[in-house]
Length: 220
Image 1 (cartoon, rainbow, N blue to C red):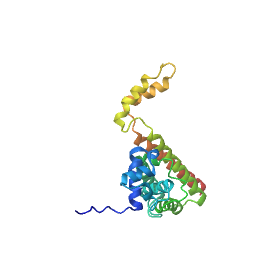
Image 2: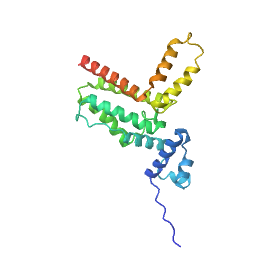
Image 3: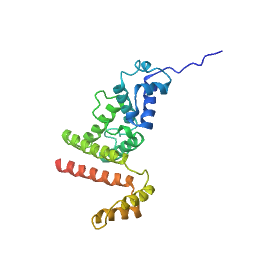
Image 4: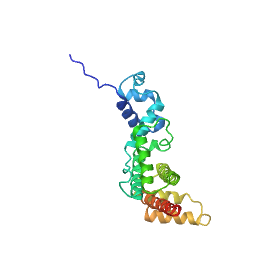
């Protein structure tokens, strides 16, 4: 008889198993025991590769940052770079919804995290922003992107074609058109036209970028 050789445990395998758990069941479903079970090992084996659950979270956040595309500083117009980066962040958070609220403030940021933040600041600085203005612009953009992703995570529909039925059900819960005329109007209109949250994201993003551009030009 021959024994099947088990693939060696590595930090990368531990993080990939944890990522699959978090994507499937949310961040709160994550535990050292469950990660170990998914790998077919004892929980104590994980500590040869990760320090604790917080170390796993740092690693997972870095995996998400690694999916986010940011232009090289100075390679393109700052507005183009920030638009593309915003779309990429939203897409990554759509794939990993548990990550909303965990992306910033890591005390032990990984290489992709550092590279991403450096590139964003670099694009803004090379785009003509003074240091403090670049910080303001970065903060405003992230507040919009992360806030939108958080709100999107709680939507009761995933596609525009599903929104009409949701709006119809919501309209039926409104007690009186006389008491809430504008809410009824909103529900009725969106029930007919649908509600495309992708369109909403791009509409708001352009407002944010245009506002930042006016601020930059006025501050120069």
